Length: 198
Image (tube, rainbow, N blue to C red):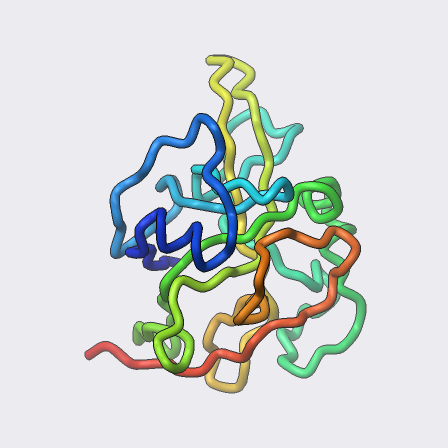
């Protein structure tokens, strides 16, 4: 999964009424963010922070770069887009703690999705930017080097009939970027436009 973040920090602050974390160092615009790249997220304290795209669970002995977390966990093995059962992400050991206490909003302008080996650029109608995508994060310490890595994963749901990757979109027009840890429901806006690249 790849995504685009071209919005400047001031635009992100205004759009989500969030403030940069005290130790935030601005990062350059990126037209293709991939696993291992740094990007902006908004954490529970309404602070914009720079985390790495790719999360490593606490008990891992080496860095893992988990970039997505399925909301239904392993309960929807058939990838049924109409699945309405339990959002069992909390049953997966790597996401058990983050889903309850380490949620974040991943800031993006658009993302790329593959369908039948063809890339599509997916963004919201009327070019509303930036957008927020639900995510989870973790702070992991490398047991050998003692390096602290703040990483995140994007929460996804089953593909729709055209096999595009969907994400939990946060409601457009929110006045605050606060993450509500008591609400695990999909309250998202729908994907509005998918444009195929030739």
